[in-house]
Image 1 (cartoon, rainbow, N blue to C red):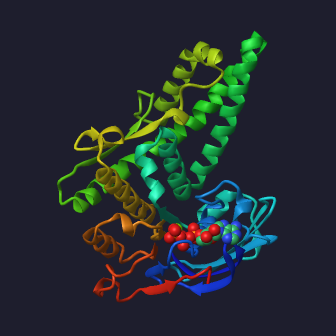
Image 2 (image 1 turned 180 degrees about the vertical axis):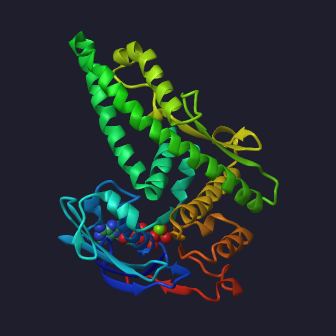
Image 3 (image 1 turned 60 degrees about the horizontal axis):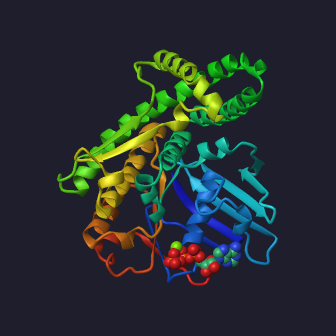
Length: 365
Ligand code: ATP
Ligand code: MG
């Protein structure tokens, strides 16, 4: 899959702009505050339906403008070209179109363009709370599987209702029997989510282990493990049975607290380097390299699952790596379309980037 072109109108600091992309390497160069990240963000929104920097979509509209408009063209490996367009107004109202047809579900968008973004905040994946790692799993799996995307939306809906029910039961036991209905529904969706996450984590572990070993000259052993309260993980039915048992066991605690304490919404990933959990004990450099290994693995996983390489967006990543790592990275990505932002090219201007395109950005132009 390749990004062919983009058009922007009244998007953040872009008045009007359009550009064509190289099918492989694109280096977006410019000083601070010129619009490099804004450009990547505009591409990102077309694939995810939302920004990675804000939940307030009205912020994407240019100052003193009514509406932001973005249009991108992507070319699939079978040469079919699709156009994705969106408009966002001041009330954060969003409208997405694929080939001129309005789409109502974000899952349609997620399935039609595969993007992977790597930016400095990705260290959160390693360092922050389990929420970040669950978000990562949900995002990746939603891209690979529309069914997963649907399951997670449903699961969250049922979870919210169950939690409301728990609070009602605190004041009236009349509602108690309703819990059986929710537990059945929750464990059905929940076990599908856990099963998918387990197999994704196994794959992630296998691939990232090898990538990490290459990046660290075999000095570091990276291991990724899915952490869940479910004990019996043999197959989908066993997971479901175990989950129902646990929901049952936790009922009184859950009623007292007013929320559901077991299930995939509480699970996590352990990220270990040489058997040590780097969330707590890793150096900054180890954490950074592990985050990078995970991102690079995603590329391979998407390729395996959907048969095409995703488009890679790298924001401000180069400045975090030493020159050797920068070059190794660019080289490792030679088959992938990559859009990289940087303020400084001098380290990269050699034969490694003979075939790329350099796009200079100044004041949103
Ligand atoms: P850096 O190298 O510091 O990361 P950058 O080139 O990535 O810089 P961007 O984050 O793309 O910079 O931001 C460019 C400019 O866009 C900023 O100066 C910011 O004030 C401006 N900007 C952000 N939102 C809007 C908006 N809604 N309307 C107009 N300008 C905006
Ligand atoms: Mg930036």
